[in-house]
Length: 79
Image (cartoon, rainbow, N blue to C red; front, side):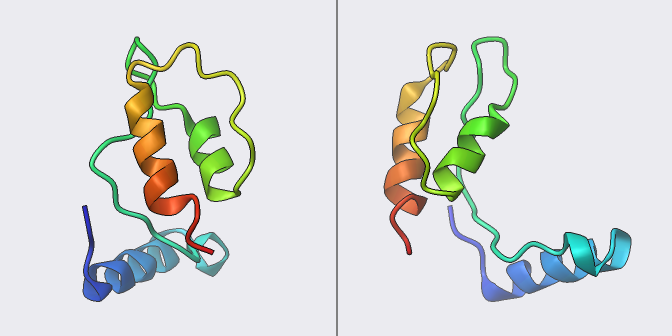
């Protein structure tokens, strides 16, 4: 899933207007799916680990491990 530069700029403007400049994201990533537990909760910890290039911790509760693998391939090695 991709987003245009216009969408990224609008999202950043919206966050700055509604929350403030200190909350404005440096990067915005688009994805088709998010890593979730079997009960449907988003595993934010894994998103942080992928974004920061850290080793993933416990992933035993993932509903679909392929989602994490796809995110790592797409975003984990950009820098």
